[in-house]
Image (cartoon, rainbow, N blue to C red; front, side, top):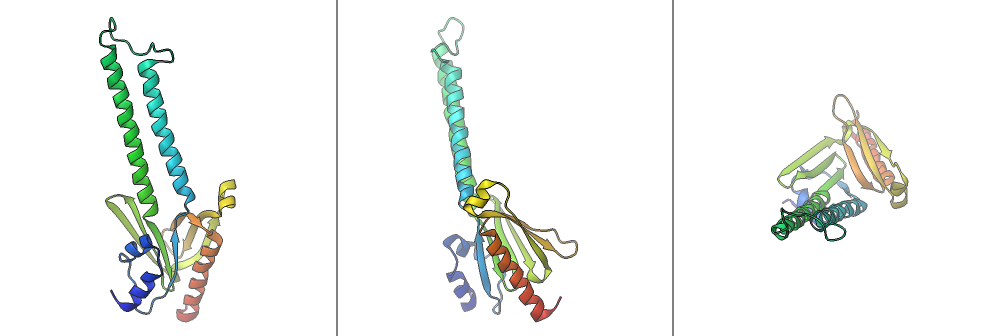
Length: 201
């Protein structure tokens, strides 16, 4: 690792530092910002995961035992205990899967970083545990940045989506759950303006 990259890496968060090695970074390049997803997204993931796990457990318990203990019955009742145990076990297994899926979603959510430099926008994101996507867009290709804050929570907790409008047929990158979206959009726009002053369109 070059000294210049090491100095830039030292300014990053631990996760940002770990993922920084996947992007190109020249010796004359300057790191302007690291954009990580807002923590509020983790709350949504945890609430959803716990809710699904609890619903699965309650549903299987009700199926097995009913509201008054007269749930599943098997023939004359001799095999009811075994059947109930199977249903409860299935509910527990499904609930565990829901919790595991929640933990994986948390890891993926946290493993998403956007780097803004004086030369490019670069995003490293894990679509799944074994599927990493890297996007690098020259800052000169940026035409505008749109900030979307829809609903009461984005305004209360100051997060939103950034849509980077690009020149030509390049697909417009969209970044979700961006903290301080107006400030971060301004960093991108100012980097583009400085690039145009230096190199032209």
